[in-house]
Length: 66
Image (cartoon, rainbow, N blue to C red; front, side, top):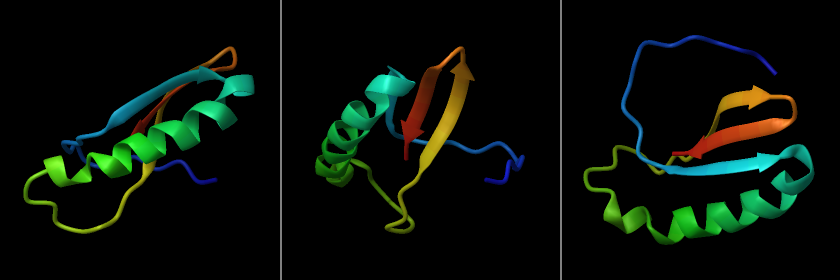
């Protein structure tokens, strides 16, 4: 994995909050929920979706699907 820093940008998405043990259950559910709500996002530039990890500490993860 490579860590990069990019210029500031705006993102619309759904957060996933879990510990490492629960992440494999939470992520598929949140991805499905996110995909169902894609039509609500106006003026999408591409069909690209990604998972951005925002925070990790002591096994607790906060990610954003965009």
